[in-house]
Length: 571
Image 1 (cartoon, rainbow, N blue to C red):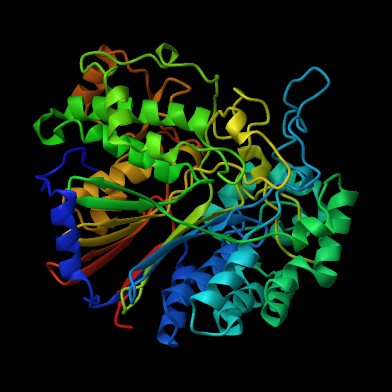
Image 2: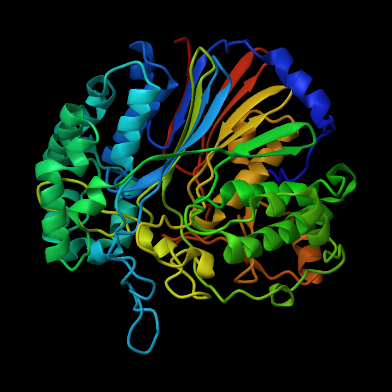
C-alpha cells in the first residue's frame, strides 16, 4: 500500500458560504443506494431489506441483528452501540444511544481487591463484567420510530441465519483461538461457539437455535420481549448464579436516549459525530480545531505526521480527564470543542520536537491495546443514511452465555475507570468522570461519523478500541482532500493516545525517511505487529460510503483488513 499521508488542495469556505453550498445540494437524491458492513452476509441482509421497500433505518436494524449472528466476537444482542441517523426529508440528524448501563448494584471500587488494586480479569470475563445490554432496545426503537417495515421483516434475515447456520471462516477461528480458554470456562458458551470444546474447523456450520428463539421473542413483543417476562427472568437468575449483579429492575428500566450529535467544521467540511458517552465526537472536534490553526498543504510529509500525532496526544489526554456519561457528569463540551481552547493547546506544540506525554498534565499510565467491535454504513435511494458502531467490547465479550438465550453478554464494564489512572483492556485511562456508578453508561471510543461538504457526503466508522478516533480523523482528512470510499478505507494508519507515549503505526503508514525524521524529533515508534504471528499487521475495519454529488456517483468500500463487503446498487 502506498504512503497516503498527503492531502490535495482544500477549499477553505467560511461557515456562511458552507451553509449555502450545502443548501444548494438539499433535496438531491443519490443515484444509487449503498451498504458497507464487516461481513458479506450482513451486507446481503441490508440489501434484501432495502429491496423489500425498507429505508436505511430498516436496513440498519437488519444489519445490526445479522452481525450479532455472524460476528459474535464483535457484537450481538448482549452488547450496545451508537446509531447515527440522518433523515433526508427534513434534514433531521440524531444519535441513538444504545450504550450499555451499569447495573444498579454496581459501585465505584467493585473491581478492586482489599489492597485497592485492580483484580485481573474481573471486568473482562464472566457476568460480573457485563453492563445491561442496549442492542435489543435500540433495534426496536429504530424500527418503530424511523423504519417502514415491521420488526418481523427486519429481523427475518438474522433469524434465518441463526437457525440455518453460517460457515465458520478463518477470522472467526483466529478470534476464537485468542479467547479459547475463557470460552471453555462456560459450558453454555462452549456448546454454541466451539466444536467438541475446541475451535471449530474451517467451514463448520455454526447454528444458533436459542438465538433464533430470542430474536423471535423480540419480534413478538418488541423491547419487552427481551427486558421483561420469561427471558428477563432467565437472564437475571443465571447472571446472579454465576456471580453477576443484574436485577429485573435493571432490565425493565433500561432506556434508549436520543442525543444531539457533536458538530464541528474543518475547512469547508462539516463533521457530525457521536456525543457522550462516546468520546469520539468531542475528541475529533478538538483535533480538527487544532489542525485548523495550521496549513497542512504547506507542510512536509514528516511535519504533517508530527503535527497530527501531537494533536492526537492532546485530545486523548483531555479524553482521559474530562469525558464520561453526560447524564452523570458535567462534560465541558463547548470548551473542549472551541477554537479558543484549541489555540491554547497548540501553543505547546513544537514542530522540531515531540512533546513528552509526561510534559502534559498527568492523568495516569496505561498499556495495551485492542481491536474488536463492528461498524456499518448505509445510504438509501432517498438520501437517508446510517453510520453505526456496535460492540460487545473485548473479543466474544465476557464469554458468558445465559443457557437457553444463545447470545454472549458484553464486558463493557471494563470501559469504566475501575481505578482512576489505571488502564483498561485497550490501554485507555480515565479519571473520576468515568468512574463506575449505578445506572451510568461507560465512556466509549465508538465514533460513527458523517462528513458533509460542497462535494457531497461520507458515512464512515470503524472498530478498533482506543484507535477508533484516530482512524476516523485520518479518514476525515482524506475525504476532505477529495478521496472516494476506497481511498478512505485503504489509507495506512497511525495512532497516539497520550499514554503510553508511543506512536503505533501500520507498516506502510510512513516512508523510511519519515520514520527517521519522526524518531529524530523524539517520537517513540512502534510498528503494528500481527496478533496472529507472521510479521507486521494492520488494525481497524472501516466501512465507508461516499456520495460525490458533483460527479453524481456513489462509492462504497469495506476495509481490506477485514472480511466485509460493500455494494452500490439500484434500490
